[in-house]
Every structure is written in C-alpha cells, then in structure tokens.
Amino acid sequence: MAHPAPTPDGDEVALYYDIDGRNQLYLLDPDSGDLEQWSDGQVPKDARHGFAWDAAGDRVFFHLDEAGNEQNDVHAIDRDGTAEPVVEMDGQSTLQSVGDDGETLLVGSNADGQMNVYRHDLPSGETTKLTDYDRAVWTAELSPDGERFAFMTNTSEDYDNADVFIADIDGSNARNLEIGETGAESAPADWHPDGDALLVSDNTPDKGRCGVYDLQADDVTWYGDGEYEETPAFFLPDGERFLATRSRDAEAVPVVYDVETGEGRELDLPGGVASLADDTPLSDGRVLVQHTTPTRRSELLAYDIDTDEYETVLEAEYGPFSPEDFADAEYFTVDSDGVPETPQRAVDHDPSEELEIGAILYDSGERPSPLVVNPHGGPRARDTLSFSYRTQFLLSRGFSVLQVNYRGSTGRGREFVEELYDDWGGAEQGDVATAAEHVLAEYDWLDDDRVVVFGGSYGGYSAYWQLVQFPDLYDAGVAWVGVSDLFDMAENTMPHFRSELMVKYLGEPDENEALYEERSPVTYADNLAAPLLIVHGVNDRRVPVSQARIFRDALEDAGYEEGDGYEYEELGEEGHGSSDIDDKLRSLELLDDFFDRRVGTVEADMAAGDD
Picture 1 (cartoon, rainbow, N blue to C red):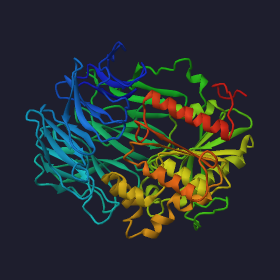
Picture 2: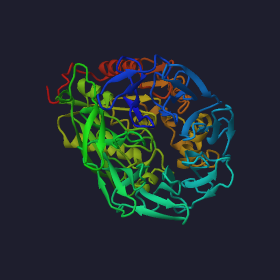
Picture 3: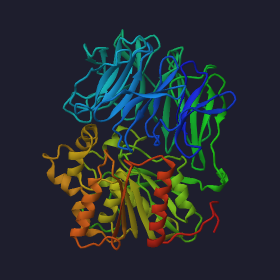
Picture 4: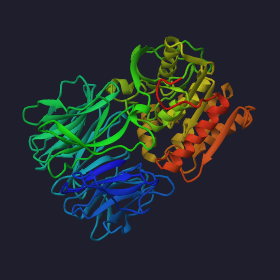
C-alpha cells in the first residue's frame, strides 16, 4: 500500500496497492473496507512517486516515467480507466499542487536545467515557467483562491540556507518572508483555509519547529517546546488546528496543535512509526494515518482527533505469515567520536566531538549469528522502528541486522545534520563502524567472522567506504546503487541533486578537488579485502550507473577479477531501486545467492528466537 489519498469530499480513498502482484490504483470505501481496482496497467509498476486528485474528484494525476528513470511526466486517469498525458516536459517533473479551481497545476521541473516551478493551465494545455532560480525550488503550494503560491528556495550565498517565498500566480512580486536566520532552513507546508496565513517549518533553534505565519501582520507564531524535532503537515478544515509529525528516537507520532492557544498533544497511538497519509480528512472529519512497527506492516487507520479513537480501515496483508513470525528490534545508543578502534587504511580521521549515536539491532535468533551492517541512504534520512521486508528476509536467513543513525541523519535537529557538512565520508562512517564494534563486543552470540555491510544509495556509498576504509571489520559487502566517485556524481546526477546534495555537503568540485578525491571510495579500490557485490539499475538518474562501472573498472585495474574478488550486476528496466514485486524478488534472490556463497545462510524459521 502506498500514497493513500481521500477524495476531495472525503467519501473514498485512492491508493496504490500491489496485492495482486503489480502496483495498481485502487479505491477504498473507508466505511466498509471494500477495495475496487481502478487501473489496469496504466499507472507505474513502481510506486515511488505519489499522485493527487483533481478538484472535482473525477480524475487522479500521477507520475509516469520510463523503466524507473524518474524522468516523470504528469498523467491523469479517470474513473473509467482512461489515461492520458497532461504535462510532458524534458527531465524530471513532479506534481506540486492542484488548484481548487479545477484549472491549475503547479509542477516542479528541471526541463531548463535546475528544478523550478511551472504553472500548467488544464483548459488550454499551456505550461508557463513561474520561477527561474539557480538553486532548486521545492514544495510549491497554491493559495486557496489560486492567486498566489508559496515555495522554498535559496538565494543567499550560504548553501545551507532555505527560505519561504510567496509570489503572485504569474510568478511576479516574489518576496522572501525571511522566517529564519541565514543558514537555517524554512519551508511552507500548507495554506490556512482563509488564505491569510501559512503553516511553515524552521530549524533556526536547532530542532525543527512548526509555525503559523500571519501574512497580514508579517509575524510568525511558533509552537512546541523544542524538545523534539517536529515537521508541520496541514491545517484541519476549520483552520483552528493543525497537524504535525514528531520524531522521537527511532519512532514518529502525529501531534495536533491548537492555533489560538498553542496547546499540543500527541495522537494516542501505539509505539512505532505513524505518518499522516494525506492533507484531506474523510467526510466524517477523521484523518488518515499509516502505522507500522518492526513486526507489523503498514496499516491504514482513520483517527478521530476529538475523541482520540481510531479504527483500522485497511489491514496489512501477510500471506502465509503473521506479525508473530517476524523479529522485533531493539533501539539503543552508543557514544562515538567518529574514530572506531578498527585500524584505518584509507583516510586518517582525527576524533570529532563525541556524540550519542542511535542504532537499531534485530536479532535473528540464529546462534552464532552472522551480522549485516545496513547503513541507511540519504544521507539526510534515518532508520526507524518500522517494518522492512528486506530486513525480515535477511533475518529469516539467519542474519542479525544493525542499522545506524550516524551523524548527518534526521530526527535529531539541524546541528546533528550539519555534522556531515564538509565531512562526507568522515566521522559518520566512523559512527557506523563504532556501532558495529559495539554490538560485536556486547553480544557474544554474534559471529565476528561473518560480518557483512550492505546499503543502497548513500548506504551504497557507505558500503563501498566501509569496505575500503575498515577492511579488517568486514567479510563481505554489497553496494546497491551506491556512490563511488564524487567527481562523476557531481557531473552526472540531476541538477537539483547536484546543488542540494553534492555542493551543499562538499562544495564545488573545482574548488574542493582534494576533498572530492579523498572521500571517493574509488580512490582506495585496491584496499578491498572482502568479496563485494556491486548492483546498479541501468536507468538510475539520481546515482548514475557510471558510479558502479567506475568502481568495477578500478578493481579490474587493481588486479581483481570478476567472480573472484568481486561480482557485478546491472539491472535492466530499473532505476534507483524499485517497489515492484518482481524487482523486489530479484533483489532478494541476488542477496541470498551472494550471502549464501560468500558467508553462509541458514534455512531459518521466520519466528524470531528459533534456533
């Protein structure tokens, strides 16, 4: 299940669902729980990108790319199943906002190079560029009357900065609301129903906070006590309250705030990860919440804000399994200065400030148990106490799994994120190795002769880097759509990833050549001392397949032979990962085959704790 969204009148819920083996669009009756399949192959098989209803509730606008390359166009499908392209542009296009007038779409596109905002007029089919900034423009939100839009971009010299702007619908009269300090990040989340205020976020004080900006008074009111990172979501229809999401350790819970009094409270939900599904309540006023835990797949709940009661409107499917078959997780912290005890061979790194690093450990129940160290992607992301099919699969094969929220991860505030700026491939990689050393020393049932590192995207960068920086720690590794050469990444990734990721974290390549070379895993390819599986989608435009080919060629030049020191797999008709069932199965088969041959797996029972 992915991207559940109520109709504008709140009577039905559209969602992507792959229950029959292929991602399709379905309609859910929230009262009866009945599902009706809407599409028949018109929507993408990979549910990475979401969709939105038109104003009348007659059509759904969705993203469609070619074989996972994320160069999306915007299409529409009506209730009869007729689909057609709506916005076709070069590069990547993302639907940002749908006007209540039934005539206007705001679309982000990098057709002219950088990601900017375009207005698409549905009656005429004309598309007009509204913004023209050198840095990426994000989160464009139409005002209720359709006369203005809010957006986020950066016009300062500080790459760490992001500001909220408002402009007229033709792009004129753009003004910076100057909400936070320079170097902090602010963004719009939602317009007040009356159109006289904006719900905004800002991390000036470190932890992300929620605010309501009064557009007439040019003044903002902040909410919360700053103890936890909070991200605003949307106003309720009466405009008297708004919802947000609070990050707490490795969990997430929605929060409701009273606009007038400032009082806030968490929704009464079990532990785990709860996310607000959409900004449109059901017709009875309840809001949709997705909820998951390490042992329970995502379920869809309808939550009554007034009574704090909820019911499950779409239960998770488990096939032959049940939640009791899956292994639970333990959250813990470890102090790290970014320099593990494991000898380094790649880059000498002086100790950094000692920080408390969060981590999650899954116990497979196998004794002794091999360990998969599984750093997350992003890097601006985090691992949470939520269900992962890939993690549970590894557990079923006897591997315990360690996930590390290294410095640079989200959920801990701006200062924690900025620890990674100018130090990509530095202390955060030491955090990963330190957490691995910690669990290997703490739990004698872990087999320190069978330790594997596996990650995708920035996690794939980490997998490369862990293997060449701490080769004595690992016995095998898998780099999935990973970054290996920072110069090539800066040159060939999409423009908005270049500016918002590469340059923001590392500076311009021609000004920081030494850093780009020093923190590229390919520079140290000849340090590889354990079998490595390299996997990459040929249609990946975030992390181009050249990243895998460059590392493979460097291994060949260093004397490694394919099939011996490393293995290599390019995936056709796939980009930066996939949620398609067949693609998932292929990925699990690749992992299982490699781990079985290189480390050894077991025919483990799915029940946690079984020997």
